[in-house]
Length: 432
Image (cartoon, rainbow, N blue to C red; front, top):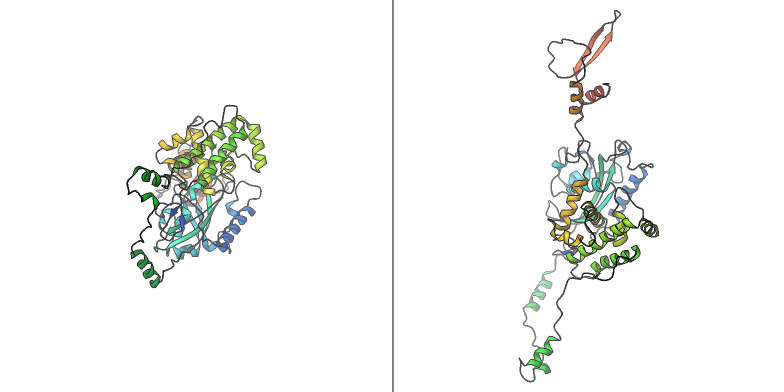
């Protein structure tokens, strides 16, 4: 079920969802300044490598950086996002996960290690094309409640595509405070005592069950709690300006904070208002540009819904939540939903908000790169023959030859080896 109600675990710590599910990230209350500083330093290091480029070059990265190298991992996506390789793994992460041997791929990562908290979020980088920070609590493979804070940062080998991700994560185990035995005993004794009888009230003067007594009691009954949803009926008209729509959308988002139940209906209603604002902004670009400038935000071609959710939910709102909300609005735009229809559409969507976010991210995922060996082989198979040579004992389909020109103009083969993928690709590029 999708809502913004915090999960309260048995130690009283707010947690967005149970640790076994953990689909969303909320800031835990016990992450300290040291952990924050590590990730600020990692982010500043990433920024220092940009050099006016969309992403830093992987050749500029030092994964063993002394400030955070032991807590870091470098992922290689040159073979596609579904086949990520681990090129570097810091000692602190190795020790925490009891990883004695080599760890070559994400598939080798133990599922409840701290390292898995990083690798579980790597697709968000590819979807958002920007650094992503996250923090939460979970139960580790040592069955210990653990707080963690991580950041993932994109890198590129060709200046355009994200094919490397560098992650840094820090963590601390949460030690439960044992209640002293005598305190436990005292609490148990108090709970075992029968409740004190209530004093007689005037309304029972004529004997219980009389109509006026029932009415008197009813006035003290607490009202039934209803999910708080900000009502917008009649507040907006076709002539309403973009500023009016923004104000209504913000009121709807603010209603989430005032609702004790913080229901799914309230969240979906707020997202519906955000989507309707985005549709109106597309029709009034001048006013939208002015609103963005006033808020210190910029339109983003690669992520057009990110400024919208920042305007409505706040630029300091949880970044993971903002990314999810932007994905929902992007999917609604992709489906060309009319205004006012997003809440109902979310209610009927398989998996609700989380399902829609996952669907949108799958649609954004870039296609896997073709195998360069397969592509080069196809071109070389169809290339015209230049010369023929019979070599005894050679079984490889493609070989690399080094030949020396003789005085009579002929060529003498002096070296022969099986051609590797890089040689095949280079030879295929040289074909006319």
